[in-house]
Image (cartoon, helix red, strand yellow):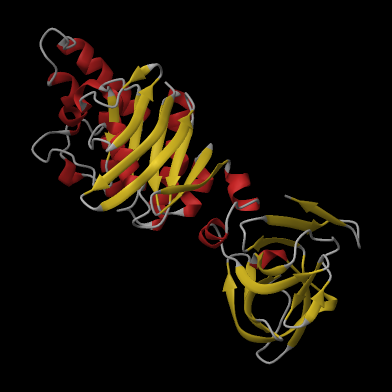
Amino acid sequence: MDIRIRGLAKDFGDFPALHGLDLDIRSGELLALLGPSGSGKTTLLRVLAGLEQPSAGRVLFGEEDASATPVRERRVGFVFQHYALFRHMTVAENIAFGLTSRRKSERPSRAEIARRVADLLDLVQLPTLAKRYPSQLSGGQRQRVALARALAVEPRVLFLDEPFGALDAQVRKDLRKWLRDIHDRTGYTTVFVTHDQDEALELADRVVVLNKGRIEQIGTPDEIYDAPASPFVFDFIGDASRIPVTVEHGRVAIGGRRLDLGVDLAGAGAATLFVRPQHWRLGETGLAGTVGATRRHGTARRVDLTLDGAGPVEIDLAPEITVAAGDRLTLTPARWRIFFEDGRSIGGSLDAAPGTTRAFG
């Protein structure tokens, strides 16, 4: 089931939560809505699910205009952050609830409901827990039951609102892999909300980055991370240093010193250079700076460096490279993007062959 959103707006009194969004969600894809608190991602999900009515615009499920369709008739599955399981019901009863509460004319037989519950318990890897109550389950197990309940009604679309937000880091990591596997096996069109960039980049086929009720960028995880469309996306996705620069005659200057990026830039004036910590390259020429604090950061050593005339940046070094506070380093960005004040941007990277540079829009 594909979903098309056209001119979608949602106001809460005088507060505009969504500003005329256009978005196409492909049938069978796993789409992440990513953004900080207040970006509109949960509001968008609730409008898609029918839990909120839009102030303007349309939501189409396939060719059907679902904008005014009640949530009960949309045939969607919804998984909340805090499970929303019925405490007085067993696991099996929770999963079956959406089926047993249907009108009698639409309700499957008891045997069919029991079969579907058993199949779903196998799917979510909880086949022996049918008779337990939610209080007897771990957080990860409860969320698996919540997903099984959402799938029981054979939804056209599956919506997940911060599904792993209440779980600890290791459980979240395990459930990400599990959810991706479930999605690949079932093929449901799935939209999930998260503020966790790692979660979005690891799980999703495409990511929609939202900011203040507007879409900043839509793309694959690689496109979002490697070619951010705006300074906001560059700041929000991954770590990055933001360095004020001046562009004149196609060249970049930082703190009055020219930085050779290997390409001529169209345009002139003030701009901002963005570089991720892992994209700096040590060398004998380039920008000089003084080492401050150092710390272990995953497989790298993260170093706080103050560039001469440009301020602080973060760089990642191989753990076997030892530096101390006060040491001097010289470095060049191996991959970068420059944003001009008028919204234009250009990026570039040093190729494997020394002395060559590739620019990209």
